[in-house]
Length: 137
Length: 402
Image 1 (tube, rainbow over the protein chains, first blue to last red):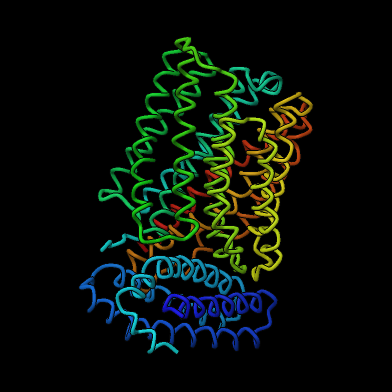
Image 2: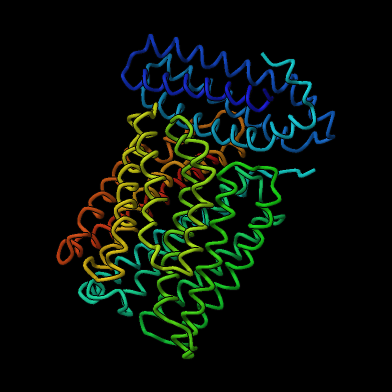
């Protein structure tokens, strides 16, 4: 088991929840949509916190790269959080088009973010801070 | 240790994407000027000019924009002065395509030589630099590897094209028919096919939330296609085998699309329709090469209108609004009027373009009036895409000043 494999699986689980939330909004099933959106936001937040509070600081300390890839990842987390807030607002307004728009944007944002992490950053972490694997759920 | 750069200035890919429909528009006009000449033979100067306006002007701009963007995101590859380098490549490509289309249409040797020079000086250094950077990237996923192979195919296509120009304009003693066949093969199955495969491996699961591609398949597909093309340089008789990589791409693609968790996304059926046409074209192409049972113009046109156009539509409808939105958010990190990319490029726009691509692909194979109608549809598509891109860019700029 590697850091890449564990965190990649977390990405897939979050993608799945987001797609389910979008599908529920498109069929106007707002109860299901609210429940799945809540799970998605909570899981994604937990994943972001794990990276920001544990993995990235360890990587930065080990490599001295504090303004590079991890900084880009933190910026993208902030953008994702803003879109997650948008999901909540669209859900409260029962606006399916707005919700689907936020979902699609968030999905692409997260996917290209995940690619960078899975292709480059996580393999670097596996090499430089393998002990962080013990801290992952 | 490599410090990867993950993004390009928006202007770099966007310039290529916004130029592509202009070449499509020109191709539509050229076709409607001489439909019967173009349809009569793929060797007619008008048909050759039109082919290059479509493949190099329209498809080439989209593919280069996508290549640079995907290489930056997936493999962390970008030039130190990406904006300037991107502009130089864009200028060299447009100059080369303009000279090539004019040179072929009017059969002017000087223009053709200028085109070969401009395209070689632009694309060969770019390809060399990309290949080295992709090989040095810490990313070793199938997309990064596939991009490196497709860049090699681009080099081969450009070298073969330049050799053809030498034969045409200076009477160089080279086997014209064999060079032409290889140029077409490396340009379509090589550069376009391998780039499309490499990008599909990433963007299909990404945009449509499908399971990942079979791991062994995606690791072997592009290198296998490259080896097959190399073998075909010596043994052209192997051409019927080209259906194998096409099937190895399209059949799993259909299965993934069926398992997509975003069933209502119009990009899903655009990928499916494009894949079907690519499979048909590569499956049938050996029969047009040998005994002429199938029309080369029909197959070549179907490769572009039925195969590439719907897939490019699916990708552009996502990538462009997303990049515009992301650029907007970078400049206005806090709340603003643009909450999501659908406000820049609504899903219904993608549906309109998708329907036009479908109609063009359905009309083209019938030839005659139907094929001419497909040319008209292409014109409408190009105008609509130009208008949509302009509107999306204007909305993004307007949102910044609110």
